[in-house]
Length: 223
Image (cartoon, rainbow, N blue to C red):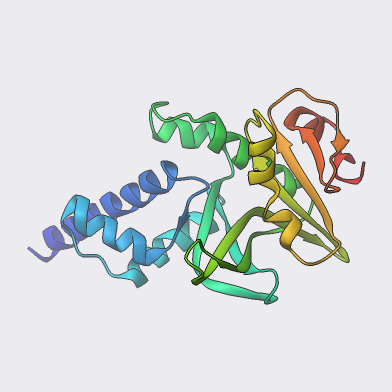
């Protein structure tokens, strides 16, 4: 009888590990944490699993080099924000296979590819947060958090990188670079897009390049 109970626990643990992997597979590049995953299990599977258990399974996936994480970093406050993180797959093929190739969004895939390339080049990669205080139309002060996809550090070098699958017009360009131009420092800012354009610096001093130039040229970030 004890043996049957242990087998049941093993089956439940295997099912839980599968579900964590599946959920992370379907949300690459999205901010999440054990608390959000815990809420997902409650609402979707009607199952209560502790945040510590979920964190342990995520740690197992990282230790197995199946996924890698990027922690949120407050650029102006110069501190890590220990709340939400982004998770990326070290092998997109395995990620796509896990989802039976049903959810292959090019935007998320490109972001994952950029992250993996930055790690291969030896950078420590975080998710950047730029906090801004603004005034709305009624004169009320509001606090906004703008995101930078990647804050890349190696030695004394730092780069801010935004992954923008397509930039159709000037409005989209302004939207993508808003967080970059409000970091308050002089580190290099880069926007990577799928559009086949020659690398160029825009009026704000932001380097815009295609993902192909980024991947094919190991010195592309220093153009």
